[in-house]
Length: 209
Image (tube, rainbow, N blue to C red):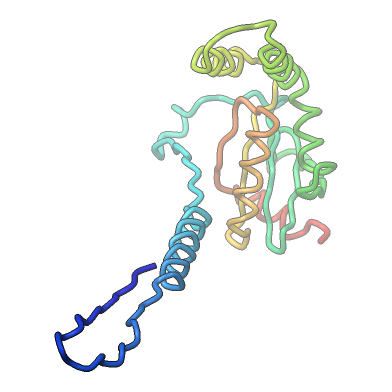
């Protein structure tokens, strides 16, 4: 609070002049307002930070014979359609063979997450047990060492599912992000975003809504 005080000297032999009022400027409301605005902008800036998910995509290879072979028994295909529709099937859809049946699921914990946990139970259990041992102090290592150990567990995994995420052109962006989130939650070691094949597009069109 700032105050401006003016005092007048009494002149000798003169009459006592009436004292003028004290000029006082109260800065308290302005300081309060400034603090309020500062707090507001600090909080809204933190809330508006963009959420970025980094995805490293391989370069497109036009040589099919050089593409790595994927074990069909471990391949889990997740097809994303319009209106938040999500389906899955195991194996490969070969148009020259009887096509697999698309199974409809959803993004709830009893839908896609339960499916991924069931398929990835072995690796998921190893990682959860390791994190639990660290939390209880049975294993004392640095964070970097723990992250490298978990990465190595994922590299060495040879029984978990290889998930292929295949969004349709009408699929929503948030559904793709939600599916990738489930990969992280369920500790899926191998997954990729790929295009739908013509056969899978037909399967998706004829799938029950």
